[in-house]
Image 1 (cartoon, rainbow, N blue to C red):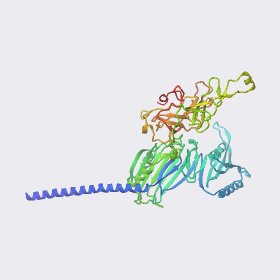
Image 2 (image 1 turned 120 degrees about the vertical axis):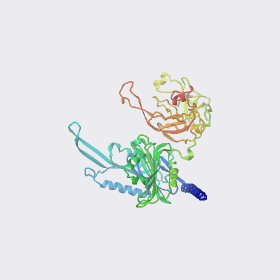
Image 3 (image 1 turned 180 degrees about the vertical axis):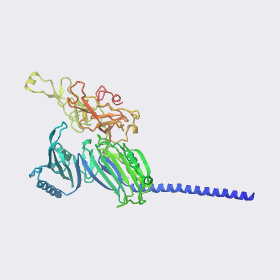
Image 4 (image 1 turned 90 degrees about the horizontal axis):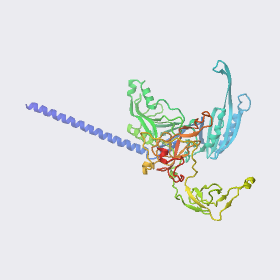
Length: 586
């Protein structure tokens, strides 16, 4: 009996000892994990304590201050664009040598007219240089016409290149064998170029590249593209790449589906070397994309990371391009090396950088705040006084059959002298015969009344515009003050057709030929397409033929407003679309 008790007690003591050891081990693992997490967080905080903002295409991204950045592969409208430091003397010598080199080559007929045009360049951004048109190619022959016969064809192309210089920067553009009808595209593009020696963030909308940018407008079919590469000197195995391409047809498969397809052909042993840290949809800066993060054990047993975020993009919107951002660790000279970052540190660095990707606003940070007009509507000012507020002023003289030179309503800038109205009485028959218009001024100073704060007169569109709509998953906020009204959205922010409006306010259509102009939209409403007139006869000559077309557009926030203000509307209280603000948008 005593032996049984002793053996049972021994078993209980042994079990308790084992349980204690297991609990101690588990507690130690938890503490180790917490310590590891703290180390990872500290390492990421040290790496990202100081950041710098880089403009890549139309986007901004914050990178560690130590990062070595390279912008390359810039292309707009098919033109390869490169910019580099060069003195003016060296530039002039290079242009002379290049022109002589082109002249020395025979033309397509074997003659001496290879250089067809050498045009001087002097842009309003301070760039000077030359546009060279040369090296025409001609291909002639016969081909089947599809009807059993043959027909002759003649294809011609020509090389267009520009060499320009300004502010210590030279910019070269070239396109080989371009169709003749597109030759004039190069001068237009050169006029939009601006040298940017320090790669500072531009204060106007456009497309950033290395040491230069292209001012808007640029169309989606011009297919702007750029690549940013970056590395960290203190972590030489860590590399980054950001690729942007606009105007491309979206791929049928996203990065997740492509990866699953590729993994399907791997052997079991190869698949066991891959651990997925993340895989799914991720929205960054208003762009919906797919994210993939993997840990890979290479054949030399080096543990490396691959992070990938991709936006499939759109074919007709430069503000939603095909975007790919990639971060890899374990990059060696000839073979993979063990990652200098742990899994947690790599994920932390990836999250810190990717969360900073956003569409660039057109205004610099210090000018984004827009001051509201301080002079109330209905204020009067007399001729000879300084105008207290820029806006549209209603002349107190005239009316009826008496006109006013310049119109009854006139735009007058703040600080300008209020004018004395020149009144235009009706013309007599004798005035009409002589082609004269009598005029006179009142003996009393003209009184002017402030009736509109806007910079331009509102003109009703000739055709019905597309309306902002709502979906079952969006909430339209009208007259909601504070953050719910979009106060955190910066003036100059961009959005696009079909996207929920991020802030109630006045949004400008970025399509210069559209009828929309600047319109008010409620937060949460789906931004509409732009409306364009079509030439008569495009859809036939029937009275019921469409007079307009609609297509996707970008919209830019010009002014925050919880409701469509009535200050600029006419006395009937209706806006420029002939309907109340709520009826207009919801």
